[in-house]
Amino acid sequence: YYTRTIMIYLISRDTQYSPNSEARDEAIFKAVALALTLQGEPLAAIDENRLPSAFTGADLVLSMARSRSAQTTLAEAEAAGLTIWNSPSALLRNSRADLDGWFNEAGFGAPFLHNVADPEAIARSLGFPLWIKRSDSTAKTAGDVRFIADEAQLRSTLADFAAAGIEDFIVSAHLEGDLVKFYGVEGTPFFSHTYPTRENGFSKFGLEQHNGAPAEYSFSVSALKTTADAAARHFDMPIYGGDAIIRPDGRFFLIDFNDWPSFGSCTQAAAEAISARALHFLRRRA
Image (cartoon, rainbow, N blue to C red; front, side):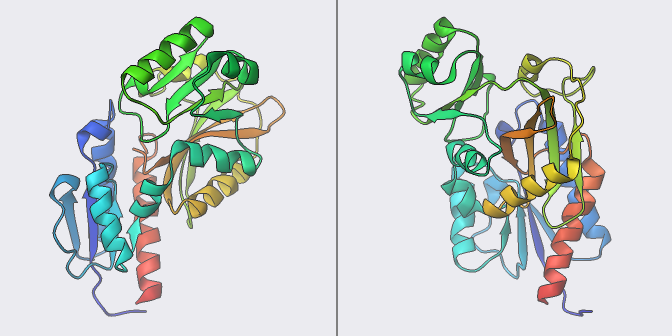
C-alpha cells in the first residue's frame, strides 16, 4: 500500500517513424494514456519533438520516441537516474545486428552476415532467397527491408544501399515456415500472436507475403513468450513486438524484435498490460 502520488510521462512517436501505422501507433498511445488516467495517477502526455528541458517530478517515463535526438535527450535523463521504458540508451546502443547476434547465440536466430558487400560471398554463405535490412535504425520505407530472390537483385540492392549511404546493414537467410507476429510486455502475463499472412492480415510494407499462407504448425506459445521476454530483459525493452518463423517441427526462430510496436491486433489488452507493469513497478518502489 502506498500514499505518495506518482508522476508518469508518456511520450508519443513522430509520424515519420510510423510508416503506414500512424493511426495504430496513435491508438496504443491513447489507450495507454487512458488506462493510466483511469488509475488516478498524474500523467503528462508529450510529443517526442517537444521534450521538456527537465522531467519535473517524474517517477517513470514511458517512451515511444524513435528520433535519435529525442533518444539522446532521454538517454541523458536516464543516465541521471530517471527510469525510462523502453531504455533510450539501449535503443541507441543496439542495432539490428546486435539483436540478430543475440538470437543466434541463444539458438533462435537465422544465419546472417553483417556489413558484407561482396555478392559472391553472400551467395556462398546464405544462398537464395535472402533478406537485406538496414541495421542502424528502424525501417521507415519499404526500401529499408528487401526480399532478394537472386544474384541480380542482390547486386542491385547493394548498389542502392551504397548510393543511399547505408553502410550498416545485415543480410539474412530466408527461413521457410509460418510467419508469426508477436506482442508482449515483459513482467506481465500478456502475450499475443497473430498470422499476418492470413486473409485481411495487416502488413506495413507487404513483405510478409513471401512466407505465404500459414500452415499453422503447432508450437509452444509459452516457450516463445519465455524467449521473447528474455530478449526484452537483455535489451532493456520491456514493451516489445517481433516476428518469428515457425518450422513444421514446431521449432521457432526470431527474425525481428521491435521497440514498442503498434499492438494493432491487441491494443486494449496491451495498454492494460503496460499500465499494470508501470504501476506495479512504481508501487513496489514507493
